[in-house]
Amino acid sequence: MTESLTERLRQRAASQTAETEQIVKAELSKLTSGIRQQLTGELSRIQSDITATSLHISTDLTALKWASRYWWIALILTWLIGGGLLTWHSMSGSGSSPGQLSLSDYQTFTHEGRKYLIVPIGSEPANCTQSGQTVGCVLLPRGE
Image 1 (tube, rainbow, N blue to C red):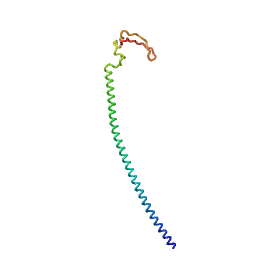
Image 2: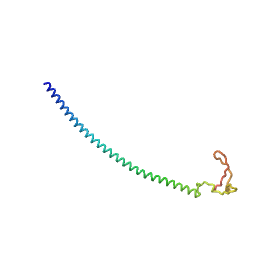
Image 3: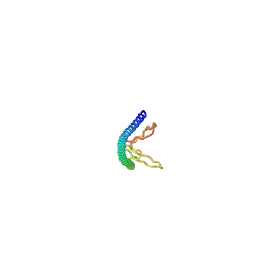
Image 4: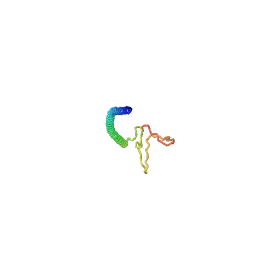
């Protein structure tokens, strides 16, 4: 009788173990399916975000590329116009600003390979201080 009881208890434990395994497998299957669905949804969302971000970056880079081309064109044009204006200004003989006189505003003559300045009538000799040194200079008349 003890053998049959022991045998019945073993059979019952085996059937309960099998039943527990089936329940655990079913629960694990549900859990796996739920996790798989969540991960698939998240991966789809991440892929969609990456695609949208890539498209946005591509659009911004295209705009930046065009802007940089125009910036270089504007810079080159500025250099050309500035250089042209400086060349024209220096060639037109108006190199000095109003109120300032240059050597070309006075008469000069050359004798034995040396150039001499003809001082305007009414000029007065003076002493000037330049960089801490006293040098000879000429005070020009008011009209000059």
